[in-house]
Image (tube, rainbow, N blue to C red; front, top):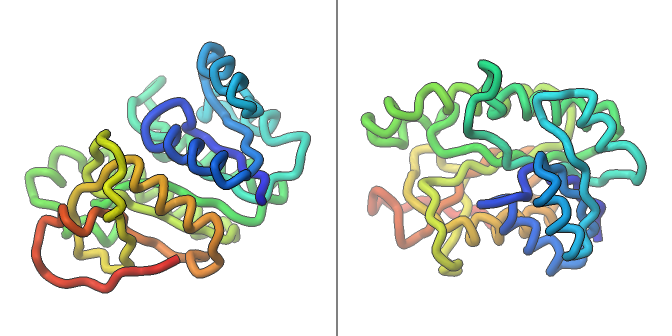
Length: 220
């Protein structure tokens, strides 16, 4: 059982990861922006901290108190005050984790970031290139931080129930789609495995790849 600090637990992949961590009896502190979401999570027995990842002081305060074994971040998306949280918010979380003495950080980004850019169809990459550039900067900041890291890059996300066909690969040339619940299952496997340490992995559904080309699966 680990003490996990989870940023982005309010919805999507983050909420699915939260459910998976609770099922595995991990202790979770959720960092969220909304008081209503915090109240909802508290009814589930989750400790919460309210703040904005673009505010370093709020993150530092949120990480104070109980020791943290692992930080997981799924944050990203909409720009705020001219800055995307994809990079700046994650940069703040990474820096705060270093200061707090956290040893391990799992960052959820996207296929198309970094060397996986060539895996996306050109039109998809063109539409997403700005946010993917921010995600790549966050990845590089994490790698340079000295933290033990796992970077997980999901493919195109769907909201249907888990298929059980989610897989990880170190091959950056592979792309496809995956359900959010399957991403969460893969993340939770990495939480419990040292094999995923200092790895950058793509996450996709083996039945929903863009190409029939074979690839090697990574097992945490």
